[in-house]
Length: 246
Image (cartoon, rainbow, N blue to C red; front, top):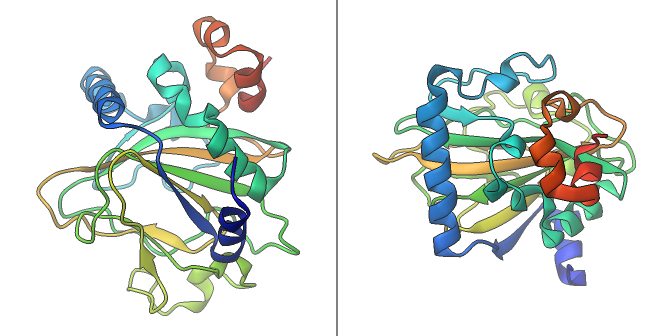
């Protein structure tokens, strides 16, 4: 599903823009579903993350969140079963992977800035990567609306940003911004230094993250705990394998 050039780029830089995997009508459908969930869940939105000891910052200020999208409609199935996305995940993690969580994050106006960080507690040895993330853009990512920043190649460093940077919130001289149209999907090795930037516009900057991990690790959202019979029937054996549910 990936060209050798794409594989090499993901290995070298730690991220890969797969281009548009959703068309305009699909993006609209997803955003409408998200709006309905935010309205229905209110203050409980994202609560499936709050009781997880594996989430570092479950209540990030200045963002809207939703969690456990696996069980909130068939419109979200594509976010963790798309074959090209899975091919990219396998490039980073090998075949022994599973979905850790499927969440929505929107940076509010004036908010969204994150420290440069990694999604793993320590550096890795010999490319033994444990986590890999996927950003599905539900709005255009542009220079001033809180686009994610990444330091290319930093997944290969034997040091963590919080240990070596004087100010992990400050711009990094080597960072790049992910800038792409809505519907695009970006894979990034979660050991690469990355973080959200400030949304300087008057509108939310919306995205969905399908986050994968090594099959031996605990999930951010315990899929077995939350899985519904309706979801099981809908996703079949392949989907259940990816979720690691019985």
